[in-house]
View (cartoon, helix red, strand yellow):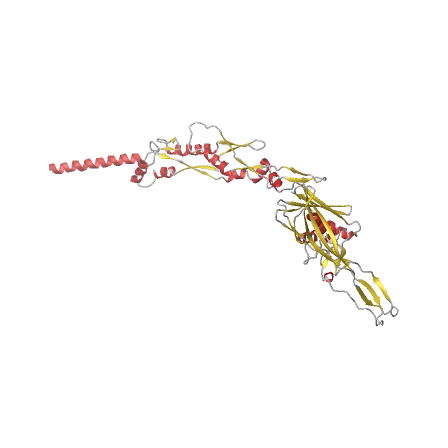
Length: 476
């Protein structure tokens, strides 16, 4: 009996202990407060009412997001922009605290007790930043308006052919990498019990140089006018004068870098596209005939004479089949679309600028660049041989028997050698032949009566003037 009584006492005691333990656990998990010792971002929330924590959390986050930050931009005129962290894309969230708080009232009694007991003591703010609002605030349009735009350096050539420069101007742009790094350091990661002073940040700028700087322009070596050469077209008809002017306008301000090869065919193609050509005499089979583009060879020939006087390398050049009136024989450069071109290479070691002027029916080509002032090139042409014109006979039965009539007098042809003479300090140091040109004679044309058995035979020979090449014009 005593044993049964003792067992009852033990069971009752255990039941009482379990009931007490259950009651204690129930009381423990039924608390409406945060466990003691819990802190989030330096804010002690241990022992606080859960509802109060949730309400104050929102207030504290709003306070952080609304904190003022002034951005200072050291532009040409200092600019300050006041904004908030929220406006600049910063957001603050808990790092899982409220998920654990929610678990305090969910699940079994044991799970809730376990959550409360094991809840971490330290919690961080989950801070995220989207840089797009900041980038949009100071976007490219804003930068252009407030930080300016870079201005290229400009080379000026005065009416007196003096070379001068307008310096470039740099602008500034935001150094986004360094600015973002600076901004991230200012973003708060803790709550403060005291109001925080407004933040200030200097936006980092970088210099944006102009695409064309004064140094880069000067390095091209366009130091001065090297040479100029002029030809006249005072007797040219309106169409030819137009063609000369059009091609000269296209040629104007052509810049050749060191080693570049000038191609006159490209100038003609561009001129035809931009301006078009007009009717003017062209050369075909050794004769002047009506055509389109007559006069374009005066531009290539004038340029040829200018470049000869700089000593650059002539790559391709050929004389006209007929002498031209505006230059000595041996010093012209013809052009035939698809057949004959004028090309030279800039071998001065620096850039070469070609400028043209047309005034009072005169064409002037000026070359600007780098050349030793004590160096001079002169051009000399010598006639090696005079070619007498042949006689070409045509039949005219209306003439009296045995008679003949001169329809046109022939013209002499020439073989010409041209030399380039180089002088230094007024003393000749080199003389070399640069071309040997042939200008075919134009035959005398004589009419004879066919009944004359003694009518002479033609003694003309085919020459390159009779090639099916159209010179000094373009093919339509």
